[in-house]
Image (cartoon, rainbow over all chains, first blue to last red; front, side, top):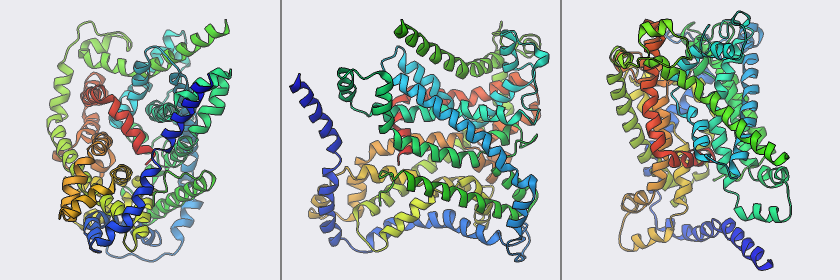
Length: 323
Length: 273
């Protein structure tokens, strides 16, 4: 018995250690190999990637900061400096600032989505019949084209559509059903629900992958020690998937602020379903207020950066820091 | 007893979740297979009595799906090849060389992942316009190629497992850096390249906003924008719209069934950078 556990531990240790020796060997080698290299060589390889990164990644962001303090309409040759006016306008006009409220529906939805994903990832990590079938079905919506998803759910939510018919089968009277996409009090629940349908599969597969990378011997040892399924989840699974949960959470926060595709195609932001990004895009391209839209984009960028920074402070993730 | 209940609960929850996932898709299939007359008279959940492919033919021709698939294919192929070349080159420089400002370059690539892409389009649009790329296929191609940082991370991660002694041996044999990159590194990166092709391919196939914003011309419709534009003239002809959506979904389903394992692994690799 004791010899069994000993070999078990050895295997665990060797898998955990395997990536480590390589960088160590590499580091000693890199200090000699590049010295022979011509100092210009890396820059030749980086020339095009960096040029594109700067032109289409950083120049727009820099321009955005500049536009945000002007009254530019996107076409005119003149850009008048207006100071912080655009920012003041955004924070004081309730119909603009109100888009943050819409984000809350999607934030709540992403928390439900992550809980569902975690639940299904956990139960499917134990032996289950038709495991791959269940996994495939739950995951597939994530791969579907956003426009197709919008069509599916426009039909799903329309009067006498899929949802109403299913509820009818369950004996619910059609007259008592609301307009799922027509009622401003309900529309955001419907759209956020669509988002749960679409993205749960991604979280689920990521969580499942993380759980399955836990070596099986750990579960065997826990079984021998008489740990319950709940304790296995609490003390083995939860700690080892903490990094991916934390990463998913950060993506959920920035994701709920930048929701765009589904409400844009399904309702075009009507009935109080305009999200931050829809409002920004409409302000820029429909109302030609590029200055104001840029200010909104800057606000969003700052929020996302702050949230990411807080997350990095709370959960240092060595995997991301590869520099 | 509780054991049995737990097992029942587990399978019941799985079946329920699968029903939630599948019902909207099955209804889409039913609707797409119904004739206009049958759609008008039957209930939403009723399976088609006389399945017909007429809606698929109509959707394919009227939504200009042939040209949409062609445009998507061109953009996808060029962007993916470009991403691979640029990404592996950047990864080679960043992993195999020590040079001044290396940390700064890393930081530039890292920070770029945090910028929410959809929002900065307000300003990106002006840059694309200034280069005269508006309403050309080059606009999405350049944006897909130039702003893809995740693939660079995947390449760097993988390149770390390729021993530097290989580079050194080649240097001793007189190979220059370009030869090392193209003859040694690039072929050994094949698994990472496959991952990037999958993630990037799915992303571009499904991308809506960039083609919507930069290629308003009808001739330049990709599958997403062609399907979306199809909604206007079709209004509430859901049997035709459903067929259109299915035409877009079916290739995805085929690719998914064929490459399941690689897609799962690829997504995990992409998410943890």
